[in-house]
Image (cartoon, rainbow, N blue to C red; front, side, top):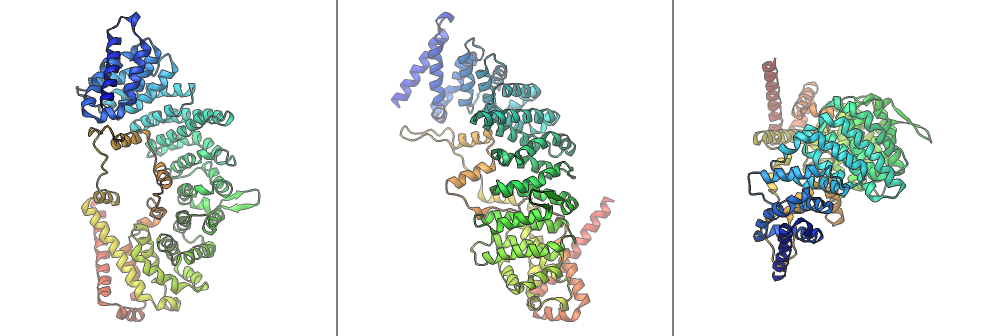
Length: 627
């Protein structure tokens, strides 16, 4: 403690002497060293109340004047000090923060390039401060111009990272600048990429990756404007094609390219012919050099299938070995993943979701492929039949349920060919209890419910013998889903909010609590703040968990954001209509089924019919009111 106090006193004396000395006698190097000392001790100083209260005065008296100093390295040090003490508490009415912002903005056009770079980095730490919006928003176009000018002069990844924070902060205001931003960022990517490749410049390569992340940030801000995406697509497509099509030479940028492609495919209603150029390249990349990137490929592949199913069904890729249909490309990708011992279970689940996507978006058009879907899916189910975790089995059930909804007779025929119908359904009924998510429950309800569309005489005996159990499961799960959705609506909570309410906010600690002299200085609040400023991605979080041994791949949910035409189908109404029709067409067999049901199951069926009728009445009433 004595050492710290004496050191700070000595540094303060240096600063006071500098401020009181005539211009010709000022020791600029000595002052720079004093500021460097203070900045290097920023964390413990801010964490200790008796020191933290003095920081504001230090900045005002000894740092603010240096922004206009004739000495370039002192202007540089002033920008650096802003970064170290960005978490300082300002006690005035906001005037000092406004002055600081003006100082930093002025240094973006400093005659010295190192000062420009440090100012661009400093601005990143001030953006989140209260009142920063009012100062920065009016000069946003000029800010963007200055950042691009600095980027053109030097490939610094921290400068690009600072630009990304700026774009994230003002995302809703960047639409007028989107075309210019993407144009400049694409050009900067080419420039940095070439420098990184030709000169083996790691900083330039990192700056190139940051450019792509900035582009993704721009797309995030304008993704709701389809007309804007149409304008940006021609600018971005050459970039994506370059990364996908160079035999893995740009694999370090593949994740960002797939993010961009996902934006372009997911948020546009119709996909252009030019955009389809990427589809076969995704397959080639997966097949030859990017096998481990399947999870990032699946979202854009699903968008291709769902947005343009006819193009997907009729399209083909001309590859060196042969011309292969797009459907067979997907089957090949899934097969390679499922049969590869290196593939994780999470990757297998992502792969299986592609079969589900095809079945949902191509009704009555993929009968010929159903044997392949079953061969791969049921083979995987056999491998996982005794697995402790049911997640992969549940993904298989989603495919089977989709196939039953697609064509129940054809799907049961495929299962009968393999003599696995009874075993599969018994295991499926057991695993229903492990289904916690909406999608597997929905596909279980729709799939099993579709079986009751068939005449009982055409059903295999292995199905007839368990019809009471199947009926009970379809009804129970449908009612459970409806009750849960109504409860969430009444509570005003979605699943994410429920999770937050259950776990509570994360305690990041008290920034001003202070530390003992014998304790290592750590500050969770500061780390969380810096992480937010840096725009740390979910991928970074996952990789950190993996590297620290805290990775749980079975916790990954591949269907959180899945969408399909089946979303519009109400499970209760579907099962109710199917059962009513079956009871009407075959009263005898279904009386026997009803007799085999326990009283609570019969009561549940009656409740299902009543709920379906109420839902129809509500929908009719709403339609009348709207008209």
